[in-house]
Image (cartoon, rainbow over the protein chains, first blue to last red):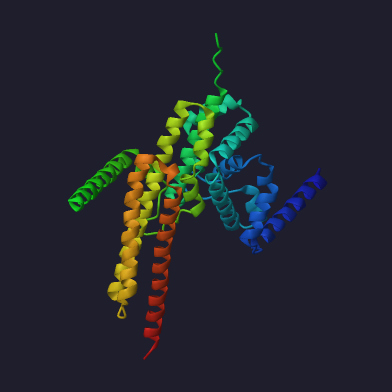
Length: 168
Length: 185
């Protein structure tokens, strides 16, 4: 029991020193950004999903980004900056999508969700959670285009889900 | 006689155009989201420019063709309303942005000791041209919708960028002069 306790304490010390070393080490934001892309964002099925994920790493009150793993591997400020850059990049990419591509993105996103696609679309139309996906300090025209396009994509997908009226 | 008719016709067209601009602005004011709905902007901070590919997307006809294929009158109506509102916001932001640039330019021109009349006149003409283009775009978006105005919007955007770039160059030159002026005994 004592040996287990000793081993646990030493492994914790090793972990702590590793974390300290990572904190002290000055790593460029680019490296943290690449890490975020390779480890986390690549696993998300579509750009819209990546956008929602990145927006969810931002604190509602302070607007600061936080990612536990990234902050542990790099410094918290570097992780914050990498998340902010990634968020802005994905946002501008999604905003420039054609409506057809955005409808496809929304379809993929709704199908990847744990809820049924119908439920996701209904909730998105009602609560408009995509509004929080807009990064701070972006051009207001781009923000407006994004919101408008998501609203349209939702209307198109909901229309497609409606049952076709039977002909007499 | 023909001259009088032509003058009357031109005056009438100008009045119609002015009415359209006024109507467009009034409707845009209704369609525009409240300031709080737009992304907050830092007071005094340099606003981020709208990328050219976004301007191209707003005025693109591809999205309209896609919406036509959906075969829903409700979606079509929603698309027309939404895209028109976004296009009007872009025109409004472009016009406001260039007014900001000109205010800044006038400030630095007042302080400048070596004003070049020719380049000042050129900048003012470009500014007038751009404001006129914005007015025409405002009216035309209302009349024909943004999808048929892509070329004109891209031209207006390029003109706005040219003026902003010219002002940036002038600012850099005046800063250079100030530094060298301060250095000299």
